[in-house]
Image 1 (tube, rainbow, N blue to C red):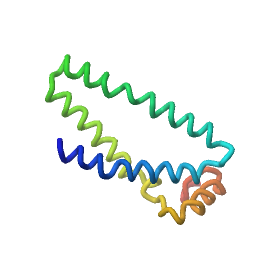
Image 2: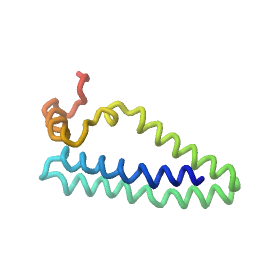
Image 3: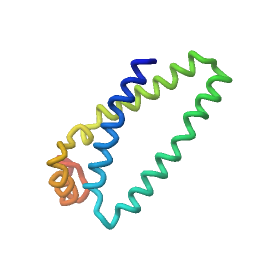
Image 4: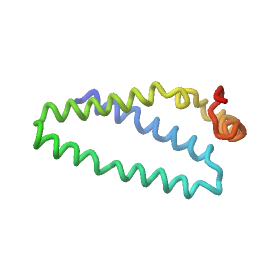
Length: 114
């Protein structure tokens, strides 16, 4: 558990700030308020799910199965992020503007798609 917590403390804030930084560059200025509101609704809506899963899991299945299930959810989320080609292809900060404008110029389609 210590390793998982250490990884979250070390890597998640950096990843979060990088993705939010790109978000600020990629979203047109006039749309930032709406896009940020939509993102916050989704993020805040997901927060109550952890106590619900833990509460029902502990009462129905016990400690070990609940921990394994929650760990599996974290692994699945990490795998989805790591295997996402669009996410992996994001450039370093100096290339964000060009990448975002190229994406907008292509009509919102990722490069290589028709």
